[in-house]
Amino acid sequence: MAQQFRASVASLTQTLEGTVQHFVRCIKPNETKAGFLFEPQTVRVQLVSCSVQAAAEVSRAGWPYRASFFDMLDQFEDLMSAAERKLVFSGSDLARQELVKKLMLDAGFAPESYAIGRTKVFGSAGLEAELGERAAELRARREAESEARRHAREAEDAKQLVRMAALEEQAAAAAEAALNAERGTPYPHPNPRP
Image (cartoon, rainbow, N blue to C red):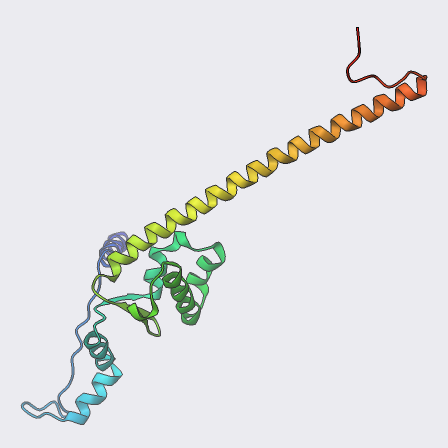
């Protein structure tokens, strides 16, 4: 029985994780719950405490796209450093907010094209698609920069090997000259005549 319950909960969890949840908020029209009686103050308090008024203001401002900081940062996790990824999971909402600001700036979005709340980022209807495009561009740019750094390191390593070979050659020539001087033989002429 317990195993069946666990399997049922796991299935439900999997279903919920694959969806975007929406919530219905029930607002009482009056304290007595009487029919056909509307108390504006009672309704207003409920709307404010449930953030319905704030959500309506955001929609009215033209920001239909909404994503939590966590969801957005999780989606673009590969664009962050290890320290930044750690902040996504263990940092505060303020730390995640700063990471979202940095991500939006790195992706080239103008600050007026989106709004950042306490726990969510808001944008126009096309923001999500544009985010995906800009993230792909950013990934390609970072990959190209990484490749350029790798090539620069390889070139520097090759130069270092050439320098080391030249130093070894100089050291060998100096040792040979010292041996020749010790034996009393003259230095070898660079272009000996036959």
